[in-house]
Image 1 (cartoon, rainbow, N blue to C red):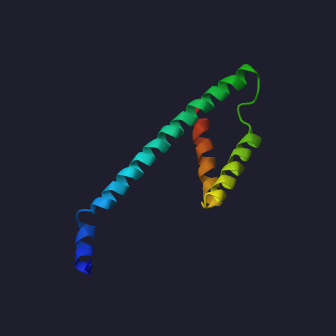
Image 2 (cartoon, rainbow, N blue to C red):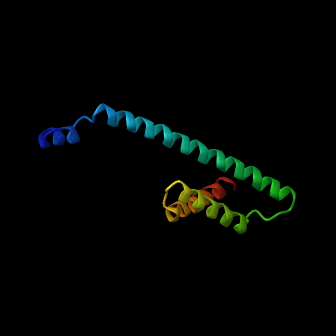
Image 3 (cartoon, rainbow, N blue to C red):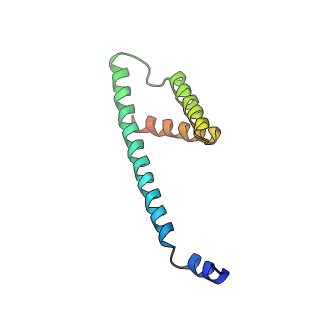
Amino acid sequence: MTKTETWTRAAGEAPTELVELRARLDRVDARILRLLARRGRLSLEAKRLKQRVDLPALDLRRESAVVAGAARGARELGLDPELVRDIYWRILELSRKAAP
């Protein structure tokens, strides 16, 4: 492919393979969002159970263990463990907000 063809394609229509890859990425993103929503619902259930048995809603030891486990899993999968830690702290924050 020439530079002109590359420029035209970049400015205009994406190649079919890229369109297909983007569609697959969109499906993965939709699954991630559904899982985040599911996690929020489960967090709400956990909070309600904790209230019934008179336990504190926030368990920082558990949250730290979840984040550490995610970092270990990230390392095993070749992902940046520090970035995954950051993401998981945000996921936990989202879950807490989903469980008022």
